Length: 466
Image 1 (tube, rainbow, N blue to C red):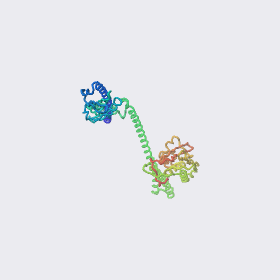
Image 2 (cartoon, rainbow, N blue to C red):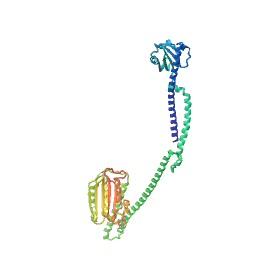
Image 3 (cartoon, rainbow, N blue to C red):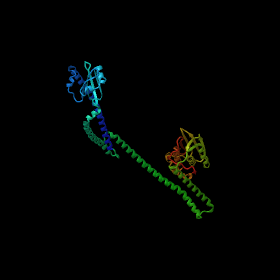
Image 4 (tube, one colour):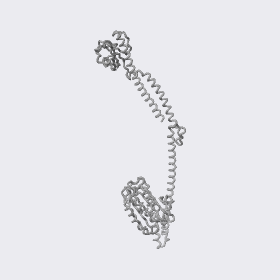
C-alpha cells in the first residue's frame, strides 16, 4: 500500500511539473513574441527617422545586431537595400504582407518562413513620406526554440523537482500508512489516528461488534441445535425402544410356549400393532430426513387445495367416525404450485391431529380460500386446545403437549414437524391459535405466485403416507 501511495504522489508531482513547464513556456512565448514585435516597431521607427534625415546611404553605415535584418524597399516593391543579401538578387517585395500593409496604412506586421534566411522571421514595415518602405526583420522564436534555449535551467529544475517529489512522496506515504498499520483491528481506537481515518476506525469497531454478536448468535444456535439433536436422538431411541420391547417380550413368551393357545391371537395382535407403530415412526423420520436433504429435486405442478383436502378427509373418515367427529369443508378453490405428495402430508397431519386431540362428538372445520395473492388453508378443531406457553414448541420433533395421554392418542410426535417442513418447502407460513378446552386452529398461507423453495427437497412421489 505504501508503494502504491508513493508512486501516486510522485507521478502526480511529476505530472504537475510537466504541466507547469508547458504553461510557463507558453506564457514566455507570448511575452517574448509581444516584446519582439515591440522592439521591431521601435527599431523600424528609429531607422525610418534616420533614413528620412540622412538618406538611404545611412543604412550602409549602421551596424546591425545579430539576427536583425533591415530592408529598404521602393514604392514599386524593388529592394533598394538589404543588410543580409544583395538587393539585385532579391525579388520584388510589393506583394509581401507587411509591405502591402505599410503601403496601404502606413505600417504592417507579419511572420513567415523566410526563403532568404531559411528561418521563421517576424517582419515590421513602416512607410516613409516619400512612399518608400523600411522593413526590419528578426528571427522569430518558436515554442520549440524557446524550450531548447531553456533546456539547461529546465533540466536543473527537473532534477530538483524529482528530488523534492521523491522526498515528499516518501514522507507523505509514510505519514498515511503508518497510522493505518498502527490500528489494532481487534480493538480499534480512533484517538491515535488523524481525522480522515476516524470514520474508518469507527466502522471497523462497529463491524467487530457485529461480528462478535453474530458469533455469539451462531454459538447459541449451535448449542440449541446440538441440544435439539441430543433430544431428538433420545426421543427416537425411546420411541423405538418402547414398541421393540413389547414386540420382543410377547414374541419371547410365544416362543417359550408360555402363552395359552387361546391367548396367541391377542399377543400376535399386540405385536402387529407395535410393529405398525414402528413402521409409522420410521416413515415419519424418513420424511423429515428427506425434507432436510438439500440435494433432492422434484417436479412442481399446480395442485388444487380443495380437492386435495377432500381426498384427505375421505381417507380419515373411519378414524373420525370412531370418535363421532364430523368434518366440514368450506371455501373456494385455490391452486398452489408445488409437490402434491408433500402438500398432502401437510393437510393429512393437520387433520389427523385435529381428530386425535379432539373430544368425542366434536367437529373439524377445514377451510380453503384465496386471500391477497395467497392460498390459505385453515384446520380448526373443537379439541383440548394448547396452553399459550406451549404454542412455541408444538412444531418441535417428538414434542407432545399432553404427555400423559400420548400413548392413548397415538402417533409419533412428528406430525407438526412434517407440517412445518412441508410448508417451508413451499415458502408458506404456518400460524396457530388455540384456547385450552375450546380448540385449536392451524392456518397455512401459501404464496400462489411463488415457486417451491430450493432450500428444501421434496419427498419422492412414490412414498405413501401411513
